[in-house]
Image (cartoon, rainbow, N blue to C red; front, side):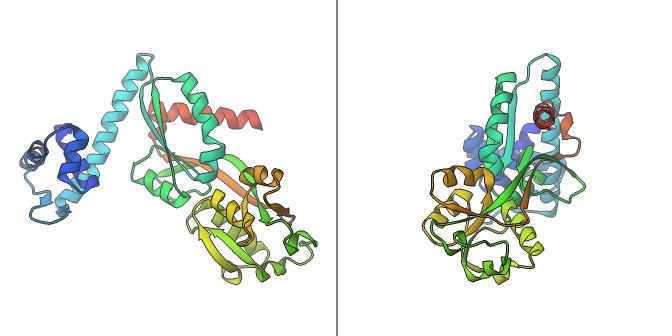
Length: 300
């Protein structure tokens, strides 16, 4: 089985374009098209429906795409594993992270990893927890560090950090002038700014509010934003109040940009490192997991 042909086919499907795939591979479009035709000849089935304005896979093409991803991944794991026996760790490690761990946890871990393995390129992508876990299942990334974990039996999620959510408000907000913990229900009287659905912070906030007998539908939601920094800026501007990570809120509170509203009980936020079962055998993935594991043990 020619892996180059499979690689070309996968790239065509993922880019939804013969020309973009050819450019990515440094080949001409006819050359890439011929590779797919040759793969179809080898397998004895049609993979792509010709004449369509977009890439349309046949049922056989969809099957070959799924199996082809696994074949290339296994080949890559084998190559990286052999290099580790030579005492040199090289290659690319793709890590997806949600906003908070991607900003406040990963930079330190990646820096330590680089000092140990300077020939490894670490590629970090930031998205919400839901997107990262989907990327991991699709093998777009090797590791996900998120505020949520998957229930999939194919995935392993390990707790690597804990945080708390704090309720912040603009300076001079009424809730900063009177004790809130005597009347938590008063939260529904004020405009709220929230993270988007799919965010780990959003999920932790919803769980905390449920303990207070409050649901998101009870809140006066005026905006849903895609990053914690956007939330903090919106609160500072007086748009509403919000729950955010204490990691992210601390600099803004110390600078006097926003104020914290004490609330009990504390809303807990947990961060998980996730990877597909068996992938810890890949030297790049395994070494990073080990490094983060040592960090967690040292902090206990």
